[in-house]
Image (cartoon, rainbow, N blue to C red; front, side, top):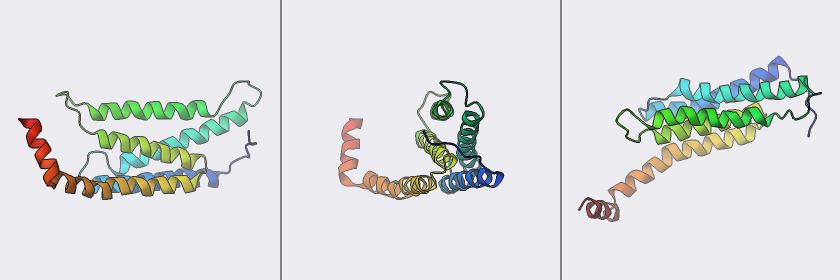
Length: 160
């Protein structure tokens, strides 16, 4: 495992800021799509994930004498925690499944924040671009598919 070097305050600020900005960019698209979770939510999930990664890395350095201390233990729990948030978004009081795309978007935003926290900025930026592609371009593709004759015929058959 690579030796951890002391991180400076500037390094911490850069990691958190990049995570915040990338999460905010995804959240901006969600605001334009009139979704409940927007810029602040996505920015907080992404930045929070980066924060937990930074803390995890620092704790491993601080407690070097302890065996079994693994920085990935905290990051694994980020995935679980954001999944818990997402499950609250998906199921409404009427037991209808709604908000699945928002929940998965938050989950991806957490991954982007984790990448920024680990200084994997190229991965974080690429994942942000691909997430925007999914939210924007694939939305138009889905809308065209829903309008297609094939889709309409299958919907009518399912309703009969």
